[in-house]
Image (cartoon, rainbow, N blue to C red; front, side, top):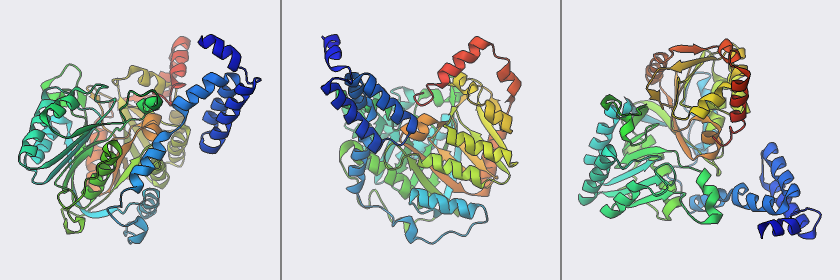
Length: 473
């Protein structure tokens, strides 16, 4: 039957086929920014109008923009727009970087913060659980992956205990990352702890949402203490306990006014997923009354809505401002052409650029695709390092040992374009030196151009073919 429909309606020469193809073309021309994607959709629509129109309706239309705009316009901002705040005094080139990021994000860089670094779940989970145990008014937890395993059980019980003490608790897990049927969400439901899945639907017209994930990892307690970084909630992150597939990672605790920005991100996502607003003093104490240190920091969000590619823009601006060094640690490295150009230009003007990736990640095909992607960078002088086992999932960037970027975003097109991500930029020399030293300790094996050239032709073809999937993997 489908074959008969395709035969009757398929050719663009038929009236119905022409209407479908033209309809897709008009929508593409009005809404698609990427030239290659726009050309591909239009070509598909004219070659096979029925299937082209169907696939475009299912996978090509970004309905997230409309939903996100509706969710965000329904909420008032927690802080005045960034242009209503004075510019912070910073040395060049960081004054220019701060000004650019302020305009990219429309968020104020907040002073009076303190930041602590935790490596692996063995160090971080106890601090997070202690914060939950000490909660007096509210807990907001968002995680891309939250397993229903040993550590997941400890978090679930701690959240239930807090709720039984009268603390307001909200938990948001990704609709794919935490499992399509999310055992941990079902457990929290049974416990009576308010929990939701982000972008989760079995409805056919919401199938595109399967490809759009909330990759954020965030815990905010009482609106005054926040944890974020690259770490999910899983027994795999308890590296000292020697799990079968250990995952090393880096997470951060923030105290001070920037926590309000962290919680505001959660509030937007929770409203987006549930239509419930979280409001009031129990969630949002006055940030101007909070002082924990002297560090300047700001939250940066990115996603396939009005925050499109903001983290990528910040990465590129940071590379452009670098004068001496750029150091990056990422589990996956498959950025787009613009980001590659930013790194290449930094290296060509004499900036020392180091990229640290795992010797072997948890996605082997990404490792292979990367090797077909990085030759121009190595030729320009960018140094690639393979970090030792266990697999390290940290997402870190340090520029000139003065400025740091930490959070959930990987250096790949999925994170920089498709996922909902959250990073924090930090202007603090002591923290930058600490992270720079941590990354330097992982620069074990240098990946050289001759290593790429030594691959056999079949291997090169395989890697290059995988690279074609770059926007999807």
